Image (cartoon, rainbow, N blue to C red):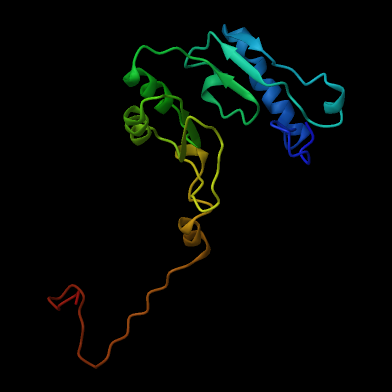
Length: 183
């Protein structure tokens, strides 16, 4: 729906170029052996023809080495990969050069905290997705970015430290010659 409509749950992508990139990555799924379970194309809805809208897409029968699983799609797309246990789920999630965000869906709060601790992602949601608090840091691991936006951690990106060391007397100082270096 329209991004200026408060009832919209999913709006357009940021640009035509991004829409083409998302559709390209979705388009790699079936040739690699995955199955588009729903969506996978530009939205045909009349109210979506004036923007860069893609239908919400679910891709199943995905293998971990498929491009749709390994790349950051940044579009309304989710890949479904089955796992046998928590350790395998963590291995699948962490076997990526990216790590912007992750969502854990469980009724077991202890499991949620345990999995969150071991996930390599910059922000982790439990039983939610993409709820962001402006006071919480935002940023990824790996190739998903360096540094943090928002929160107190973001202030570091806007500062430069510069130590100034001042000698208070004329006593010779040899940093590697036995002088008391610290304190």
